[in-house]
Length: 426
Image: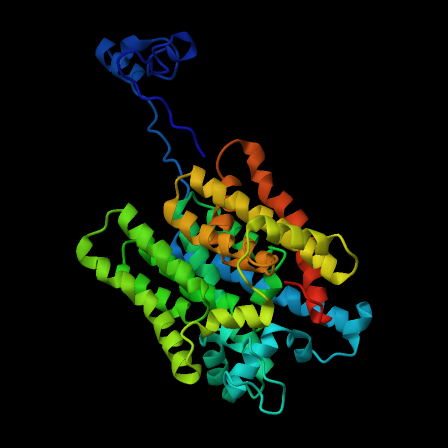
């Protein structure tokens, strides 16, 4: 950046006024100003070279933000494929004999496929699964739409997550750039992709599809585009029960920012899918809360006092084996969640406090901690804060994103390898 030359004016001397080498007149610096006359010499001494225009930083455009986010997303997906191929080539013996697609068909991915293929009654040839209604219909419907195009259920799930994740990271980057300084966009995306449980954005789980609706909905709400925000939030409510928390947070966002009351009717739209889904199961089983009771029947998610849940999880974490490690990750996830809730409260970010706080409250009051680190993939305020902190403030903060990557990255690789082996990750 070229510095501007100082302009003459009251109290500021031009180069000729300071005396010295320039105080020689305009006639070649000989000191013989009489050839042009005293007036011409005085004018020459007051003349300065016009300042060279400076180049200011080009602001980040939506197109730049999109390209940065998509580059990170596609590169990370390629990295997971390379990791899987390396594991299959013999680097991990438990994976080497498993076909590529079968490495990603574990746990909820299989259950979502079962719903898409057979409905909520489950596979007629298998034992009935009372936990299936816990899964909202958005992902099974998407699987049923895509599978005829690709011929395989698991591949359909991978492609849905690939496309949905691309939408989600672009929306996250735009949200970060909308709320923070330039450079926060790609940092927020990187923080999401390096989160230890980001394998669930690759496989045929519902997290990527939920974020593909929820993040654009939140960005639209921030911009005051409530019809669009409500429609997108309704899509999120079709995918996960987390859509209920999103809908409540949007209500808080609307009223704390004092938007026109005439638009308040849009806030009811995101609640409609939950009502319809409950009505469907009532018609099927006579139970309005089938999705909640399925959580209890399938995963033992009864509500207890938080200290009871912590004690149960702590005892499990102090054992040995894969599940002990998973429960230690659950405790770490709970610590992050509670810390994030307190930080949002301190920052008075009320709508985000409601969105994250309701989730954390439900998770830490379950019979034991289950899938808390995986649920953190949906806590985009966490990744926005990491990104903003690494951009603003003292220069040493620039290294925060690197420290985060060095700590979270290896855990992400470890959990990805564990999932491919069929181990419980979260």
